[in-house]
Length: 339
Image 1 (cartoon, rainbow, N blue to C red):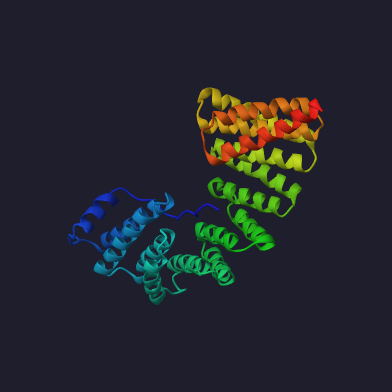
Image 2: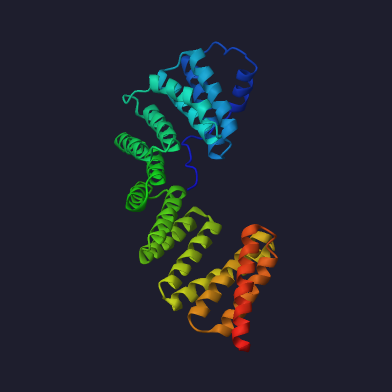
């Protein structure tokens, strides 16, 4: 699963604030609100970096937020947020040992009486529990986080908790977590679409194909609402693919032909290797549909064209592997025809 986003986004003036702190300049005398704003803005900047998976940068920015919080004597709840995120960023940077002292400092200040900072602490604590292989404990932590967030109207935190609950669980428990998240995410396509996609993939892996197809179709609609055409196309491809697995070949053919038409149009607009690969994937899957329908001649044509398009898609290991696998099958089909 993709890394879950943080909540806040930076405000104007944050970069200047970081420069002043990094240079060791003391904060100018001012109102208490200005001191709080400086710590908050640094946390917001760290969140923006975290969301871009710039974990090393976020680690440094969150540390500056801790410095600002300690220097200005802001309420402990705000310092807890910064401390917890230093720990979380360190973990995702691959250095859990560097983050643990910060997590312990957050633990010493965190209190359930402050839901916003407590939920941040629980997020980091659960991530460390999961990293240590304590998945059941981590799931309990994320369940507590989910309950706290819902009770206090912290919708985005509840979504983070549901996402992480799904990450640390499996089978039906994962499905249950994803459905909780989808229910909370209603009306937020940026959250709903990835959660529904993860639900679809989980259902498919569990062999619940009819449910998976419905989830992929819902994901396609959600990505469309979010304006993400590439992910919408991927969801629609997956729905058609599952139709083939269900043996519903007419539905699979119709869905994949629509995907292929869109992929060809994208390649004509921009003949990149990514678009070439996407055309190849559609051709390959449509070839599988025709093969399942007993139309071997048409399947041979489509699979041959898929190999050609994969040849335009660069030399990545996956693309080369797919092309070779199809080539082997085509050779076998040709030998059968000659026999």
